[in-house]
Length: 84
Image (cartoon, rainbow, N blue to C red; front, side, top):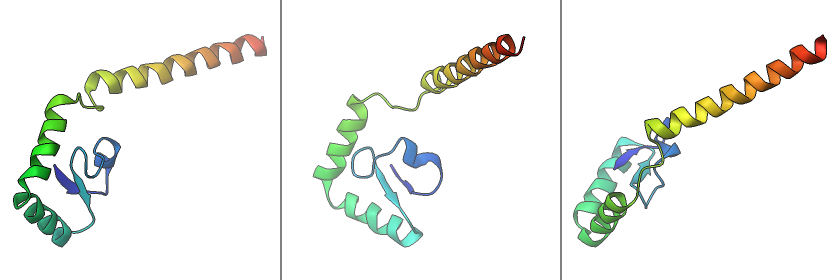
């Protein structure tokens, strides 16, 4: 994967490992060309991505959100009991 470094893609793509993060269109073109002429680097990245489960899955994201909601709910319940 080659993607712009802006936005959320940097949360799950480590440049040089899962893909490459770039700053501009010209850098994207240059990085793509470099991978096309370096089959070893491309193969290494492909193998890593095939053998490694992605960090960002819907299950992972929902688990994180539910944990935050549970924490906030527990804190709210404590605040209500303290105010009573």
